Image (cartoon, rainbow, N blue to C red; front, top):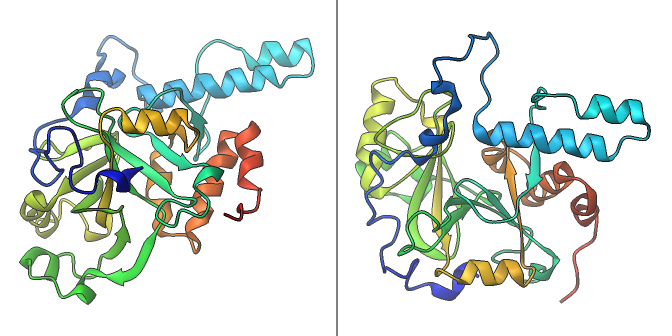
Length: 286
């Protein structure tokens, strides 16, 4: 698990803070909204993640249909409107997916009932390992409480809440940009959500001071979770993590709910089936 390689977040020895996060926007390659040949619509076009989720929901509805008529309705052509919040299982890690702790991590304090937002899956650049941040463990403290020496943290972001991001040492932040308003100086993980590290704090502060962004659009994390190249794959195969794709609004929900387990249970319930059943099970005594 992420704590196994506390001295090295990837096989290259390069941590998130050392990495150059500027100008990289991998998800834009899949942005179907750039197709100028398609007819204009008043409805926001689906990005590829939303399109996949829409197809998954259609297939699920068709599988659960109890009559031929319902089956035909459930498999109609084209994506249907997605609910405000959605989540579904996927077969392999990808940038922007979430890792949901299984019952096998009950009793492991660092990861028990945690949800990790995977910032990079390690698939694009084989020399780097996957890493992400825990999104459902607020620390109940603000940045100003930590008496930061960094000027931007002590002023612009002083009232922002702090969150536990994982057992490895580095400070990171998530940035909610909104659909269609990508910022080229930050790395977009999924449409509407970017991330940065200490080396991009000055630029983030400047955008807030200019009114381009608001301080409440940021989530700051103490620590992160990282794996070596094959380590995460082995943990998934051993049954320690479920993998899911979910709506962007769930990524920021972990700091707004009273219990850190609430987001864990909500995502599992949205995934449906066996996952929904897991969300209702009591913790295993280990």
